[in-house]
Length: 194
Image 1 (spheres, one colour):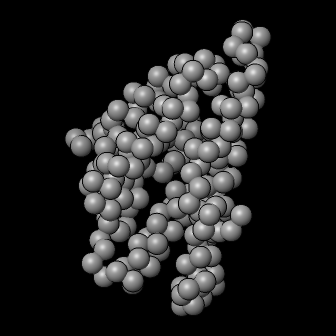
Image 2 (cartoon, rainbow, N blue to C red):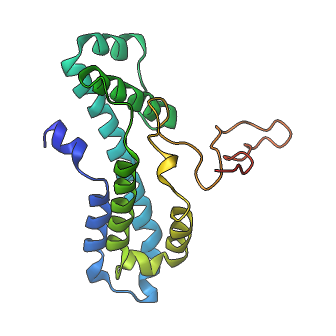
């Protein structure tokens, strides 16, 4: 598979493959122990795929812009692309490259972002409907629907610097060690008006 085809292939295809592969297993209580194993495997496969896509995007950008190649691969290298900060850097790089070729581009339009949201939600709903995945993880799927209902077009790709902004009224902050307990403080700051 070439880079472009891999970059453009939806990660939801991995979920679709798992739903299809689990059809013959059945839905009885004896299959529930498989849920953790299957979901952990899917998570790792999806995460790895996303990290590889980020690296492929960098390489494709570097193939056509040698100044970018020098900067990204010698001056400001990325790690495994597993952290949000690295994904955000790639998003900013991508926007800069688009703007080099189309100076009128600022960010996705509200209609484009709405289209992405509706297609993503529909894709996930179609994959999970009548599947073992839904039967095994009904509570998690209900939580997903609840969270997803608060995700709006204003929460992603609004400008050239931020891939995501506050979702469901929460603003993401990095993990900070809490010296009193030795644990980490919450992932989210106080609820804000969105």
